[in-house]
Image 1 (spheres, rainbow, N blue to C red):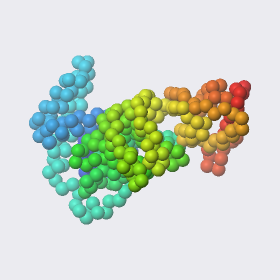
Image 2: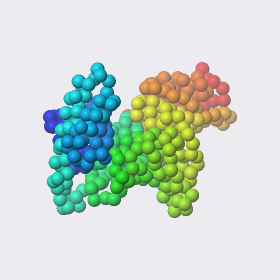
Image 3: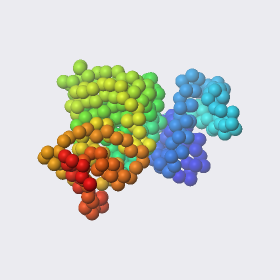
Image 4: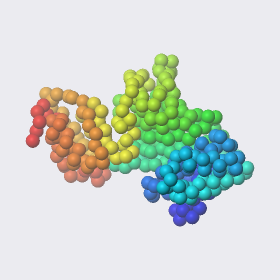
Amino acid sequence: MKDIKDNIHPFLARIVTGNATVEEQQQFNEWLQSDPKNLKEFSRYRRLWNSVEEEHHFDLKNARKAVHEKIKQTTPVRTIAVWKKVAVSIASIVLLIGLLWTVKKFDNEELNTLSAETVKCGYGMTKRVVLPDSTIVVLNAGSQLTFPHSFVDENIRLVQLVGEGLFDVTKNKKKPFIVDAGNVEVKVLGTVFNVSNYSDDNEVEVFLKEGSVELNATNVERASENSILMVPNQLARFTNDGQLLELKKADPRDFGTWNEGVLNFTNDSMEEVVRKLCRKYNVSIELIKSDNATENGITARFDNKSLEYVLGILKITSSISYEKNGVDEYGKTKLTIKTHNTITN
């Protein structure tokens, strides 16, 4: 960790260009996890670099000038002093990247030994990962992402997601970024979107925040009928076998905000509510439904609230009762939730 802090610019350069070794990539991910400010810093550097690289292609003089111009256009006067330091950092990165592109990235023998990596995120937590192309992925609780250690020899950037992830994809027109979400494939060039593909859910959801994405059903029987192009603030819902159920405008506050500690229910069934509670709070819940209970969809938003608070609100608004039953064999808190046809005090 200390080596990264002492040599942050070379690390950033190797990460952005995809030249980092497997060990460096792991160290870099640890650095990102150690402080939320690190992700914001890297994201800012990467966005500035992407815009400069597209325009100037490692022309150091013009790239440095472009960075300064972008800072002047977007920065208030009171923070210019701070951004001057950032400009020096960006210029250093640009120089390092220019140098890195003149040398051999990896020899072929080393590339052939690289294998896929799977990052898992347990219940009750989220995890940030930076991919070899500097794409940023935030995994939600109970999710896993599989990706290669390098995209150097590939024509596409293919990753596999089980669970839910928020993607901020690095632009690369020559290498489309593809998320394999079971029977649904999300294809992008550079954009921000959320994919939910939990194995115990009945649906796959894709919400587009920025840019554009192409969705394709990988199921042969569905492929021809379900190829669509999304625009920002659209939500697409598919069955697990790739059948398109719905494509509509949606509120961005309802999707991807789990990254900020928000728990959203959008016309969810009680089964869906229980699954989300188990993932977010890492608890074990038994649901007991009354035979004559009326099933109404639950819609609510909780900003960084405790499990006790959420259950208390649901008890009042959704006619449920609950009790704690110790812990299970894995050390998780056990609860029982019962539904009723009248409000229980």
